[in-house]
Image 1 (cartoon, rainbow, N blue to C red):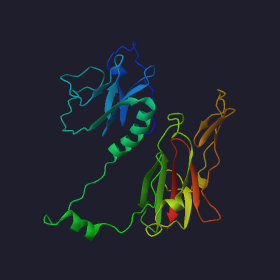
Image 2: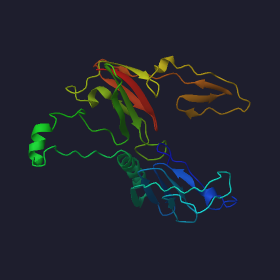
Image 3: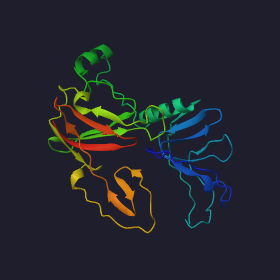
Image 4: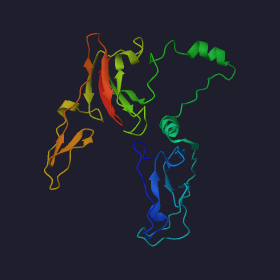
Length: 271
C-alpha cells in the first residue's frame, strides 16, 4: 500500500538480487491474500518500510537498514542508519472483504491518530475539564459514511476555508463500499459551527479553480481504448482533460457532490 492505492507485487525469481530485487516500499502497510481460503493477512504501519513476500504465506518487513559494508552498487558508502525509530504496527487476519473494510479505516486512524489532551492543572478532574473546556457542539452534524474521509478543513489565511473530501476505497475493492457515493456537504456540518454559503471546486493544491486548469493535449502513436483515469481519458490517441465537475446547490440549498472510488475533491468554501 502506498497510502492511496494498493499495488500488486509478484515475486520475481529471475532477479539477480533475490531479496533486494523483491523488496518494495510499503508506505501505509502491506498484505498477502489466500483467495482459495478467503483469507487476508494485513500489516498496517505508522511509517514507511520496505516489505517483501519471499515465499508462500510469508510477509517480511524491514524495520531498519544497517549494513556492515558497502554493497558495491554505486552508493559509495555504508548504509548504516543509526537513527532511533519508533515504528508502530497493527496486524490483522480475517476474511478478505472484512479485511479490506477494516484496513482502509483502521489504516487512516493509524496514520492520523487522535491527539490526547491534558489539563494544565494536575488537580483538575476529568469532569471539571469537560465542564470548562468541552465544546458545546461538534463541527459535524452527522457521522461520515464508512467510505468517506474528511481529508482537510483548513483556513487559507483569509475568510475562505479549504475543504477536501476523499473516497477511501478503490474501484472493485469492496462489494459495498467501492461504489460511488453522494455527499451532502450542507447537511454534513453543524450550521452553528460551519455554514457553506458558497464554494468553488479547486485543483488538489487549492491554488487554482478546476475550471481554469488547462491541460495540453498531445498525440501518441499507440492507440488506446477509452479508459476512465479520473481527470484524464485516453481517447483515440489523444490525451484530453475530462470536463470539470461541479458541486450544485439544489433548490433546498443543499450542496451535493459525488465521490468516485479513490477520488479526492477540493473546494474553497466561503462560510
